[in-house]
Each structure stands twice: as C-alpha cells, then as structure tokens.
Length: 120
Image (tube, rainbow, N blue to C red; front, side, top):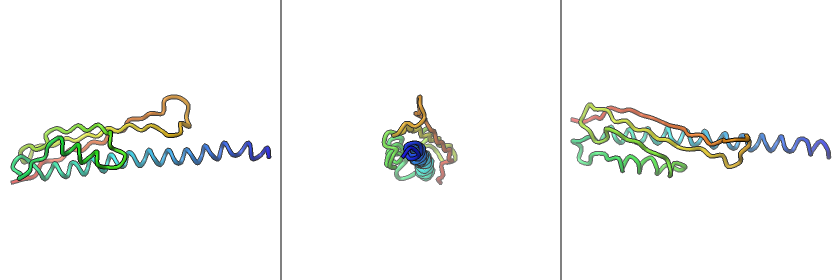
C-alpha cells in the first residue's frame, strides 16, 4: 500500500507529461503545416492570377487547421507581382491543460515561410 502511494503520483506525472508534450508537438507541427499550406496558396495566386490571394484568405487557410482557430497570422506581399516575395508568419500560444511544471507554462510558437510568387 505504501509503495502504491509513492509510485502513483510519479506515474501520473509521467503520463500527463507525455500527453502535454504530445499536444505541444501537435500544435507546433500544425502551425508549420498551416504556414506551408498558406505559402503554397500565396505563391500560385499573384497579382495577375484570375483570383489573387488576399490576407483574409491566408488567415482563413491557417485558421481552418484544427487547433489553430485563434492563431495570429501575419501576411505581407500576398497577391503581389510575379517574382516578389510573400512572407507568412503564424504565431500560436500553447497553454497546458495539466500544468505539471509550477510557474508560467504558457509558450508561444512561431512558424514562418517566405515564398516567391509565381506567374506569367
């Protein structure tokens, strides 16, 4: 009985730690995927496209990814001339569900992509 009382807190901390670490990696990889998806969209829809990309479309693409509904999106150069650069940045805040480490566990992760707009 005493051994169980000593071991259970450590096992639960390990299980919840693995769970939180997995959530953090999932969120950062989601941000990377979203910024790459938005960059591909922006690269193929320059000023002379039939439907040039807009900042609102880029934000919509990023925030359509699960977990990134509240992500902060910054896009510059979107919908520009062929050969110019489009810069897209996504910032997402990770807040643990189970705060295992005492103190402030909130982290902000940023994913960036720079693409050259293609076109005629």
